[in-house]
Image 1: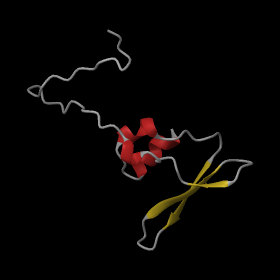
Image 2 (image 1 turned 30 degrees about the vertical axis):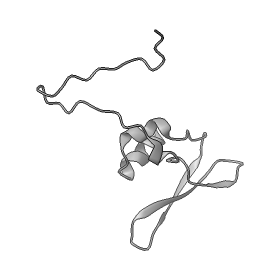
Image 3 (image 1 turned 90 degrees about the vertical axis):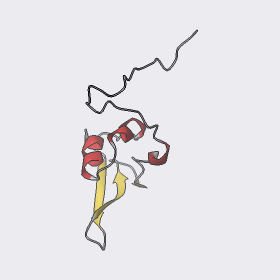
Length: 87
C-alpha cells in the first residue's frame, strides 16, 4: 500500500507498480526537501538493517508500456493474451 501512495505522491505512472521492489515490514521511506522545495526520496531503512539508497522505483526505464482502453466506445477493441501460451 505504501508503494501505491508513493507512486501517487510523486506522480509516477501506475504501470510502474509491477516493477517496484516490495518494502519489508516496518521499513521507513525517508523523504528530504530539495533546494527547490520539492520532496525527494533519500533512502529506505528497515528495522535492524542499514540505510539503503532508494531503489523502490529501480526499473522505471524498463517498464513495459501496456495499452489501456481510453473509455471511447468507438476506439479499437483491446484484448489480452496469456503470457505463457503454449501452441
